[in-house]
Every structure is written in C-alpha cells, then in structure tokens.
Amino acid sequence: MVKVSDLRMREVINIADGRRMGPIKDIDIDLEQGRISAIILPGQGNRLLGLFGREEEIVVPWHKIKKIGLDVILIDLRDITEVRPEGGLPGSGKERYF
Image (cartoon, rainbow, N blue to C red; front, side, top):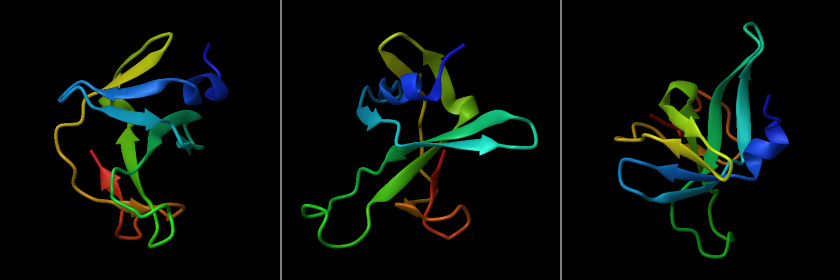
C-alpha cells in the first residue's frame, strides 16, 4: 500500500513527450467509492514570480496514470482540454482535464 505522502514525493513524467510535470500538488478522492479519482499537478502556465494571476492546475484522471514507480509516476497526457486556477473547484471553467 502506498501513502499519499509517498506519492507527493515522486516526480511525475508525461510519457507522451518525456516532459517533467512536477510533483503532485493535491489528490481528488471519490468518497463514494473510496478511491483516488485524479491527481492535481502544478500548471505549466507563465506567471511572473507568482505575483500576477493565479497558477493553473492540471487534473490527471486516475486512468491516465500508467505506472507508479519508486521514484517517478508515469502518466500519458496526449491532449489538454481544460484548465483550472489554483484552488479552483471542478467545473469552474478553468480545469485542465486529460
């Protein structure tokens, strides 16, 4: 069994283009089924030292996670459809879902 704190320590890599996506910021949990439904990654948008605007988040559904290793998590993101501002709620119109 893997702890959430252990998952957050691993680097996330997109196998579609080999890009480092950064560490996991947060996790969405489906309380009805008791499962992780998605992981939340920091957005790749351009912000000037965090002073202007809100950072975007990338929401990666669980089915897009291909492998969880000891040091990295491999995901397969081929296209981005929506973006979510940091701390925004799902459905707020600014999510990135894959």
